[in-house]
Amino acid sequence: MSKHTVTIEINGSSFTREVDSRLLLVHFIREDLQMTGTHIGCDTTHCGACTVLMDGRSIKSCTLFTIQANGKSLTTIEGLESGGKLHPLQEGFHEEHGLQCGFCTPGMIMRAVELLGKNPNPTEDEIRTGISGNLCRCTGYVNIVKSVQYAAEKMKAEVA
Amino acid sequence: MIPPPFEYLSPNQLSEAISLLQKHGEDAKILAGGHSLIPAMKLRFALPEYLIDIGGIEGMDYLREEGGQLRIGAMTRESSLEDSELISKKYPLLLDTVKMIADPQVRNMATVGGNLAHGDPANDHPATMIALRASVFAEGPNGSREIRIDDFFPDFFTTALDTNEILTEIRISSPPPKSGGAYLKIERKVGDYATAAVACQLNLNTSGSIEQIGIGLTNVGPTPIRATSAENLLRGKSPSDDLIKEAGLLAAGDSDPSDDLRGSAEYKKDLLCELTQRAIRISIERSERSG
Image 1 (cartoon, rainbow over the protein chains, first blue to last red):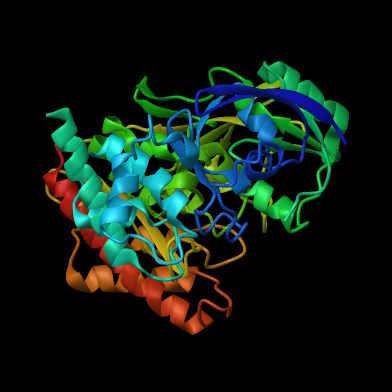
Image 2: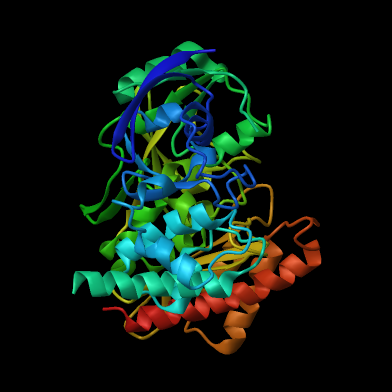
């Protein structure tokens, strides 16, 4: 099996490690770097619990080899709050009770970061389509949509 | 699930990637977006000894019109099609299709070239490209060659690519005035393969008759299928309700579905009949609205 040295920026810090070619990105994040905010749900590219941002785009980290992220910049759920202040999406999920068991939450939030970045004024339908790659098995989608709407309003107010 | 071990190779040039394919032959697989290959490796359906990652080769990710053709680089991500103004303005069939492929995160990684080169009759782009009469360009040790889409899928999970060839580009003729297309797919849930899907592309002449028409069918046979008899029925004709209905029946007749968890073969034929009619109607409406 081949070993490769990778350098990956995560949440603003650079990490250089030697990894097996077959090491999936989600295992690198959770096991090698001990950042366990990113979850493994289905492990089959369906549920979106492992969603992180790579160069600003949401991807499922269970379906990428770590080596493919070499030289890229990642953001995980741990990188969202700044200076002890929650990201508007994190605040939204808190305020609108956007979670029950919380397992899908990091993936939902990371997906919604890209969604609101591209479309700051999404309709409810656009939010639902936008998070169609994320499953909540508590099925709390109504409050998840409200949480994203809360964040959209808050982010607009911050810009204004 | 942890994929089986493999040797990872990351060429910077296309020629280097082709040399690596020549060297390792059947033991090597090309890694593009990886969203068919990595799941297949996890399940041990694919056990390549070498993965040749073409993600680091520059100049394979582009989308542009040139010389009366749309050119799509093989490494173009599905999400790039979704975000493209050119695609949403001139290629409604492609826009419909990308929106139905998997989910947003998958579309951020998955590539148009990979969707074709995987050779899966359940993938969505094959039918789209059949309807658009696309050409696929492949590069090998002896240079580049053009493969017509009708020759690209000879058999189940098989493509016309040689073991030492790489799909580099897809070309589609820019649509003439009064053109439109549509992709209609029934899936059980987001991210599922089609129970059945229909791609249609057509253009109208000045008197409102159908001039050219392409109809492709997804996941209703061992390969993607061109609904030839439905196309032949409509070509040159002024579309009427009866004619469109007959085209739906003919498209169902052109298909070869099998019973599976998504439904019986009979059900899928019924679906195709209906989806074909809807796809033709939407394509006509869009043609009438286009410049």
